[in-house]
Length: 189
Image (cartoon, rainbow, N blue to C red; front, side, top):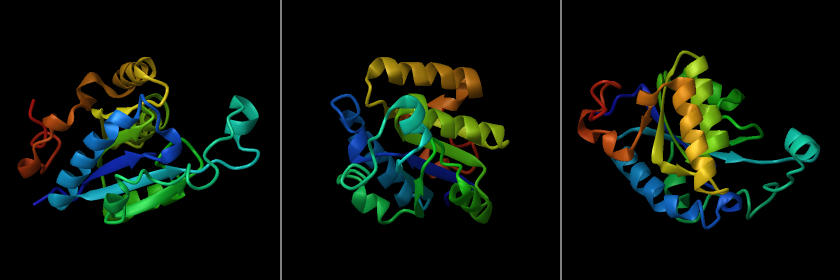
């Protein structure tokens, strides 16, 4: 039986974040989600949606991801998202908006396995926010990528290891599907 306190968060696997740098991670995410759902675990997909006058526009001068098809979950993952525990829309970097926090309380999640796009921003922020809420985050490095390339992804991994601990950076292979009953039992280290 899958540990109900664990959740897989798939961050922003959306058309607008797909480039030659990030597209190779989509099959890895799909495989991970299929295994997770097949084990009876909770999965949440997030979708970032930008808006007029957002801090992303005002401060970063970035105005993408406002409408379909940019905001849509990539076609390869859409069937899996349709079977997810939830798909939440967010206007911030992190999963932990009001809806994400409510889901966390409702389901009693304490262990957050996080993957998706972009490692150095939304994935990183979700992992750090879990840590700061006294939850246990894991960043799944081989199921995460950056649309900006390997250097940005590697920077996100490095910063995450400094923020939440080197042991919290894992691969999909580190997860033991038939024994995921606690973070200690669920990792093959």
